[in-house]
Length: 395
Ligand code: PLP
Image 1: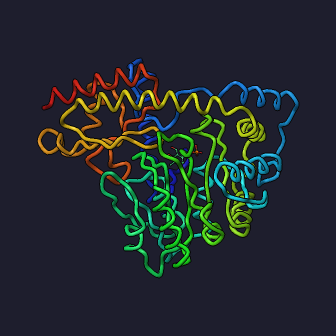
Image 2 (image 1 turned 30 degrees about the vertical axis):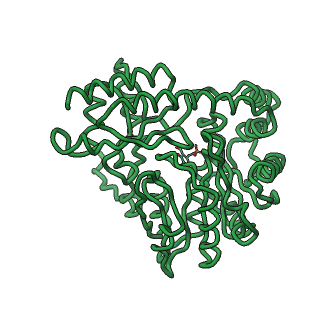
Image 3 (image 1 turned 120 degrees about the vertical axis):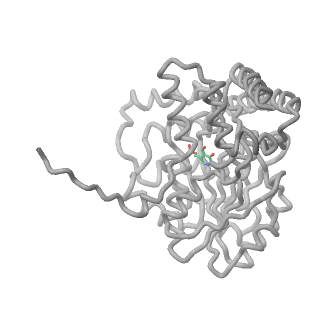
């Protein structure tokens, strides 16, 4: 018999927290495998399947044998299409050498933090936030500086200014926001850009939900002038707008020096993302955009239904999301007696009613749950029925 080995995991990985949303997803999958019918409103991905015109191009790429490594930064025609998109839709003018294509927005965010941040640096993150940013910042050695934004979760330049120190290296923006759905107003974005330029602070702008808005327009901070563009890394992907979560593809646009460093890091980590996914992403950008709008309209319908139904539950409150596909619901009134925290409340809901929601703790904002309407209308309706029943039961 071999002697038992003590495996020492590195300190920086030991302190890493697993993604709470992916953790919840694993739990739901396990219940489903046991034959339990779970209404999953915890999802961060659209229930739609990637549009056929995109899938067809990917199939053709496989048939044509487009199955080799590509250059690390991504195939030139895709980077050119991204430049065209950024110029036409976002007002950001880029050269293909200022673009890197990678394995999803998540990886590009990680690489951007690795390239810009190190021990001694601070990165400002508005809270509530997607927990991935915090863990990725810690992995870079920098310190995440969390600033709490009160409901209705509209970030202002003053909120940021109060927490700027000589160590502040980066401000992280995510608009439309996961989990609140808040969209930063252009007026505020201009003031944030001015502040970042004055203090020479970089901005990492995660714009993955840009195409999913309801009556509000998304603006890219990099479009607000040459100086702020020189300080901004715009990160985006295909997962949400084109229902391409499984393809693992996203991109970053920014100053050449930063992008070159990100390409260099990528060349030693994942190399290029899948050649097939790159062809599919090219089809997504250059093909018809009708399906993007059809998906958005379907989400808008579900949002409307939820505003109506959630308003009927007196014990909770919420702000209607201007973008993304989440409601961030205040359940503080339901806590204190039977349930001590939103985490406990969500656990009991899953146990008793088989509805999966993500507790606010996952977004550094206890007392809330995040409800995703990226699930089918059938599930949304059933979910609301069960949530109402659960609230009545413990009232
Ligand atoms: N950014 C935000 C704010 C997200 O909510 C998510 C996924 O939930 C991602 C990035 C990850 O996107 P990708 O699939 O491109 O890695």
